[in-house]
Length: 297
Image 1: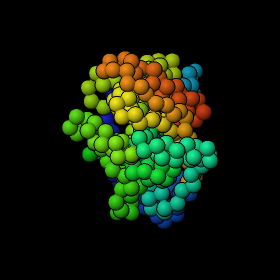
Image 2: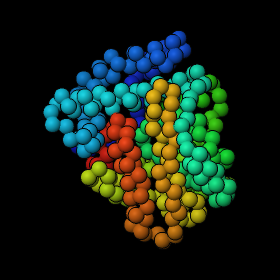
Image 3: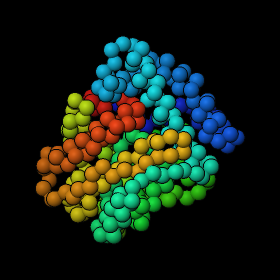
């Protein structure tokens, strides 16, 4: 049976709260120490190893169970560190963002065109805290985001009991949130979304090549770009160490109006898939789609 994404947290509410307390008491360093035995326990769980098996086999081709376990442990540990840093940003309010002057200038030029920007990222690196920390786009930000009731992890602004620095658009809402997305772009906003995870009916997806196989990617963002004239900026946010993450532009492109046939937009979905694969080559332990990405419809 295909293992699909649910949006539920991997850790319990208690474990999340315990890590938050460690950050408050001793900062990131104390919380990081706790992660080593916690991640070991998770990685020893067969069900947890199944969640990352497809990616590890395709990315690393492990030749033994021990090699697979080591890759799984490093992947899980990096993920745990990114979540810890996300909480630390909310609790401590400190983060170091590494980016090039050229990328920052490009972001500003895109915003200054007042066509709106579709910023596509993926479930990799530090995407969780990027929206709360990136100020390169001097425009209102809108986040396409579905939150499972079983998601126990607090967002950055929730640690401060503050208002979110962006507006949420629920893809589970009427018409998949398309009306709200178009309105955001027409007002010159930055629409932040995940280009590596489909939501809703299988007919809303396109196939693309990724790490030697075929994956389903959302179609609507490319059609949206074609209808509104908004450029697409593919950005990733690699974890670079304690309290540090990067902000890298991988691709910027516009999408012409190619009509209603979704297959006409497959080359643009492939652009995203190629950029995501290049990220996984450079940062192999920072791809966090914890399900079989290659068996989704």
